[in-house]
Image (cartoon, rainbow, N blue to C red):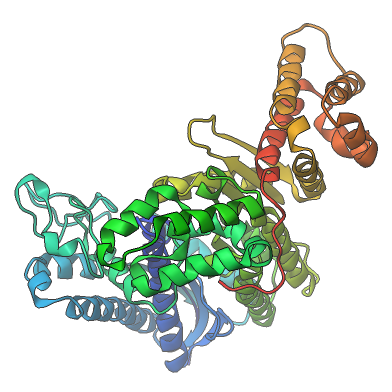
Length: 556
């Protein structure tokens, strides 16, 4: 019987996951994509296919699958596609059945079924496999790339006078609306918790329901901001922290204790539970104790970090593999890295949203982001090293406000990742403060010592270096670039040393860390690089305004 190498890609991926208003929606979309890929992988294995990627169906597969099949590859691919569609339909049916009958009446079932039927992107390509694995794999990947480029550009069903879904504007809302495009008030509470004009499509509504019904608590962006203080408060303000949790616990899932850390939210909680007779002064007192003990103010608990990481040139590494067994072992190591991601992220009090293959999406407290991404990059390199392969990870971190639009925040993180991927083997950090100038800077992993040195310097000498120093350094760079004189590294570094010496505690910092560590030669060869270095210091100053995060133990 003839053998074939079959490659399958399932989508959409990034846009599908990112189309979320709540973090629970985001996680539900991620889990749904992984579950569909796993259903396809199981079906392939049950049909007699030999899986290559993923090597083990127990791992969370990415949206790409590769296997060896015997017989008719078209039939195998067709069955896999049908399995994926049927699984998605079953998930929608279960979600719809969980709604109250009065809410079901406000759902356009016919439109919802049409959206579910035509949502998935499924691409497959195959080539005869005569034993020359390297040649067959390159051929099938070229065919798959061509198939994806020629995908059907079928427009979603659309009708006049029906509002679009705010999370996926290409699709009509399946939720009935009244005058002013307002949804039924019954949707405001319960599992959907829709806003007045949150007219969702079928996929977005299903993600909302899955996120609500999940037994796995998904931290909100607000909770993730507060996590910058929680571990520290466990030792420095344990009683106040416990009191806040005890107050929130009887209020159910609608309120998390972290909501009480935001003064504006306290009133919202009172309005939601007037019968609870909450002691506002006690809540504010406990809140102040936690903030004072941890040294994080009202402004700082409002920020959290989004991390997106991806392996560099993985496609090139795969193209160098000469046998099926080598690829399977490569897949196994990628799977081991993916399985390690949740524990690593949890160690830094973060939450892993997606970890498929070498792709990672996670939320983290601001003061845990740099250390977490460092461990991820080292773990990835170590796993590849076990194959005697030199491979690197690039990552983007966006530091964002908890009230920023989630889709916008994810795009900022993705832009940071793109910036890092351009240089490869790099980390890009983007700072998006409210009312401030957004800025980002990319550096090689070897420069993490620079990040840590300056973060520690700002943390230990916040008053002396608080604001002026990074901007004075930026002004130096701009003045140098605007003159006809060709300032060399020596001049730029000596001027930087002169500036820091004028700051309170500057001489002590210069003595403790040394000029070479504070002002690395690679960043001071020209004024343009000095200006980039000044951005690093601005972001480092922000990170240094948080206390160091304890990392022992952890819970997601």
